Image (cartoon, rainbow over all chains, first blue to last red; front, side):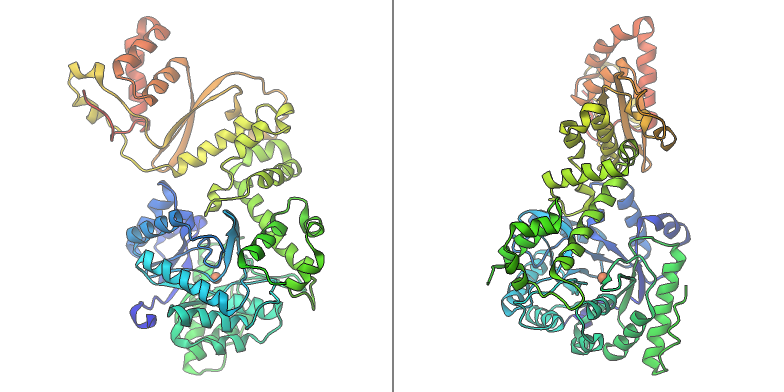
Length: 287
Length: 271
Ligand SMILES: [Fe+2]
């Protein structure tokens, strides 16, 4: 339903404070920017003005981290109202958040926590996504998270859960390739199995990011270059699902803007090569 | 053991945010219960999995507060700041959708914390740092310009009500804590900071945040403006503090405010 209604944005990067000046001054040739919605939920000042100027020249997507769609708490109306106001002001191509919970009992853990993968939770979360979409009057994309624990009560695999929620709501998916890779390592499954299970028509956007290797587990830190294995999985996903809006996420140890835009360029080259049926590219990490 | 979603999330939250760590928190819940809820192994035990979240939670919020309160951090050092933040988060777990709101109550927390007994200025320093952040993010509004005031007829001046810009704040401090804001000043021993009342005005202009101290007359004037007193009442209150040159002084004060964009053009009742 959604893929024909939403525009294809090409290759973009996350808008981060470190790059405000260079983005405004050089107007770099990236396709679009993704913002962390919560960082702009302030009354005024420089970030809001920077966003206005960026929006005048680029499409943006509003990516949230605090919707807490899977929380047992009621949806936060104040937060949703702020989100709706922002969307009216900045007209994002779409809004996304994570299939997770971030807090309960009125407290925010500022982290993305996994849910039990059960039919009951599928129905619970799906009903809430519908409420959010109705409230916002816009489609919401749901993103798969990295996780470090799983619940015994789960009745299905993570990819089955993601698919079931998206099917139940009839909403789009933001497929984070790095999160699939991280979870495949942390929970010992084949990441291609995950990608294979996601209906291509549901996927509106890809995320690419770096993680850190702690030996016994991978941590989704967004502070490293994208590793060769994640690039390979991205190429696999593009072949399997098709080319989709692709975004480079980098949130810590943020390098010069050129490193991010080069990663977006690399995504473009790799997606094109994957679709051409050329052999998977050299897998060397450029940058 | 079947828990409701609320019970499950509540339990995980308690384990993750426990100030004394996951191990201690696990002692307070039924250990077997946890193993029946969360899948352990092969590489990581349940406790280690919970610790990934607990460490991430604390590190993320600690980093955020370090960024918000760099001078407070520099004065007390990494270890004490860490301990302070741990106690703060135990009492004030975040209820804000954005990390920008996490440190909102730290200044008041410091004022009530035992650390204030040997660093009595620390709460005021944190309050000043918080004010800088709030002014940075305060609402946009047009500043009052000289042209606006030129249009005010002479007879309307006594009843004119000026307004402070929403991105302006005034802090009364018992310690000259603004001296500790510059990185170069923080390295010094803090002991020489002697109590001395200062009033600091913080404001934003062209998206940059500025601050300066104001004297007693200017403080009196700005405090009255904040209370929406008339210009006549402001002059009456500050004139005795300024002596013979009061009229000139008030005029240059007003020009200074206009130049800095300290006044708001939106709410000035012209008569
Ligand atoms: Fe992501």
